[in-house]
Image 1 (cartoon, helix red, strand yellow):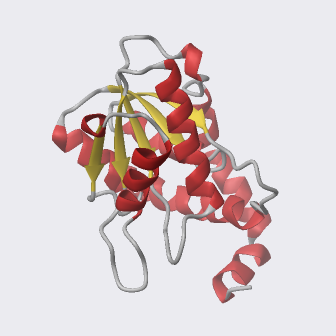
Image 2 (image 1 turned 60 degrees about the vertical axis):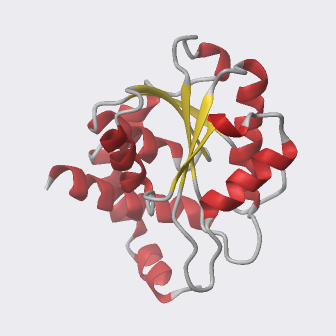
Length: 193
């Protein structure tokens, strides 16, 4: 276990209490959706990336499989693949997502928009805001990450529809749940201070 995670666990009750006070889950709940709940006029879907060291993780694969499911229901949907370029020791999650979708689905490549400015969730939405593509959009990421993503999107004046994508494999998400609490504090500070 990493040192910072050990410290987090020591102070977890206090951090969880504080997390509840900033009401990220409460703000995000009104934006949670299923594919069929999203109005037909919403044509864009942002798929948030995830770190790829040697191969795609089950978490990222679940996001992409959810994008494929959306495409089957909404063939005209356009997908913004948001992540970062390759860096030392890691592949570009954007390129990995693009390759997976072009090989494993019939999504037309012209409907796959690569955004390399999404080094984190906040930057993904700021990049999208700067490009002025859409104010209403579907947001695809894993369930543990979705509240923070929707909170950020709402605070940046998007009307998001959050669609959870969770891995089918048995995957321990406890570390990610703790990480989300810490990342939510960071997002709150970046948005409000």
